Image 1 (cartoon, one colour):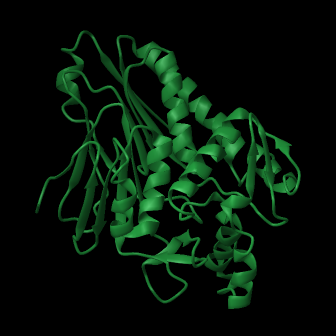
Image 2: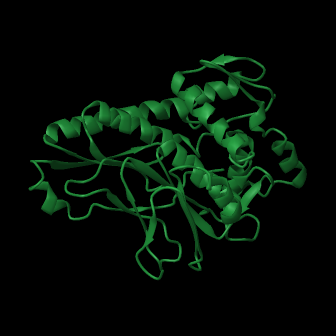
Image 3: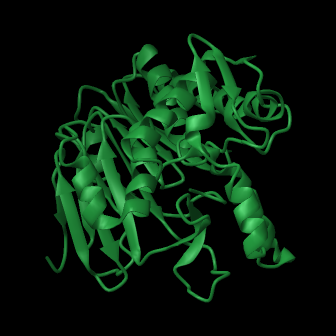
Length: 335
């Protein structure tokens, strides 16, 4: 899982906007962006009133800030930081949003047999320190820290209490938190009457509401490390997330970096970037990291029975693997 914010990018096509703005029942386009959760969030929304759309987007940004104040492990006064300090062998009452996102994360851990594991935080911190120049940790130190990891030791007691059955377990929500924040922002937009909008969390997670005027869906260009095939997907009331390794290696292999494999305790080695499409941003965010860790063969086996989920793995050499149970992934060039 991540030791840093993902830098994976996805290019959004706001195609033919100008021609539709004037001819679609007085729908106007409003675009705003804001730096939150260590990345730039962008929202584009259509509405009959630019003032109403602008106000709705601002309220969506406020919701993302609120979620960040709960889920951040960089903020010492966040609900997650408090939980990480106080829940060892003690049931801590937590806000409903934090309980909900941890509950969903544990479900993805079970689904993936532990490849997705938010209790990876001690290993995340270990490799962050190494990336800061503190040196590669010894094997003994790696094993010591690795013994702290294990989602099975997270105990959830509905409706709002969480405890850790370990003295050193810590949680990191970096592989699911932005997706959850995107979903919450979309809920705010919908509650305020916005039906056609796109929410983009730094290019790594994008959620489409409805479609642009006179269009059936939003066209999103996905990450292509080969720069040869231009993968695309049409989204309507769906989300796509992308994961890849981007940080420099500490192990002599330039494919290792910011995503940690819970099975080995080491930065993941992979040649792929993976994009996952699902109904919610929470799910697509968690799935993209899970599928990158699993690789194409095991990843396709995981999602073959998951309705409305699609995925594509693309290498720098233009090797492509796909699994389609949801929106079809298209290729603009080469395939």
